[in-house]
Image 1 (cartoon, rainbow, N blue to C red):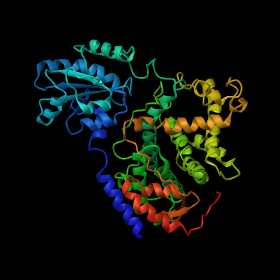
Image 2: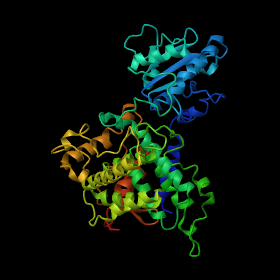
Image 3: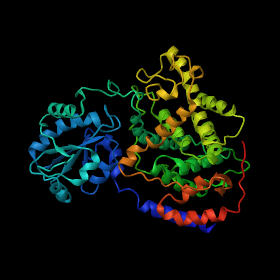
Image 4: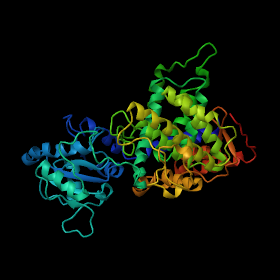
Length: 511
């Protein structure tokens, strides 16, 4: 085994030991199961001094409310049912209005929280504060100027608290609102900034896809190589930093938990009964990725959007992050991944049929991004007709030709789409490509960047170089380098690895 391999494993273990604060994302995942309390109806998330900053930094919500209370306080106990009625609307995977407000509680009667409560000048119980989640790290003091944290001054009943919230954000939420009956679900066609919330959906879609692969025992001798190639693409270009790091850890250990000799000549399937247990510690986006929090991809019905929407956003985001020399690799990786691992039989057959129509290798990333965009519109064009006939579509998110004119008027030479399909539109493809680059590129990750938790750690390397990794699967240098620099500690390894490849001639294949 090469020294490079062992160095890479060592750095990944160091990276794992210095990851996000313990418990921050875990708390968010547990909202729906009690928020830290024993009562399953508790929706308010109980925080303490050890996870307070981490949870508020990581939440996808735009606003947060923190209630400071004491468990021995009778007034606090009597107020809790009122607080929970409002928290039900915003917290947990079954939230009626997700992604807007994170409602939390801090017990000042616990010694661990004494300093935290002092930081907010808590003078009585309960005491509620409102503001952007990331701003809570600075604390609060009375009469403090230019603070974005505000004391809630009208909270004594659930009705009063919700009315106060409605005034702050211009909403009209009601205590009787039910899931998927939200008239204020955004349509996603008027504000390009909405795509920023999809970064959480991309993480969840990635984790869900690999859960399905393990649950359905889909890793076989004939699909193993295509999974490795897709992992390499994720390591290099996934828009989420933690998914890049998790993919790198899975990829580096892939030969160990799924070696080629698992398949002998007289066996057709892997003995995968324990494979999921083996992979449990190598979750593709880390253990802390929240589940059930579809944000941008939330449909108005349980069965619509969600996973499929998140997977499409992932593929588009990959298509705008690759370089020219990686375009063919990205094309074959995505086509093979959908063909081998997307469990909807008709869907994957249609997608692979479109892949099979491509007769020449892609040489430009622009061409691949536009092909994927055109393929998505071709699918939407077909589904529009089927869903209109069968009444199976999402009434608030009907399939449309993308992008609509509201999002990209410059993408259209003439009139916008009028139910004639994408082939009837005179597209300005240069403008379409600019839109895709912005929408699925910087805008998608803007929420993470704004919170200071996303670093661009991809390599600027010569993309004609190729390296061999994981049982001779050919990988673009961008993918190999992203593995090497999953953290800044990988820089020296990356330089060493690239120097070893300078004399290697590139190999290209058209599958």
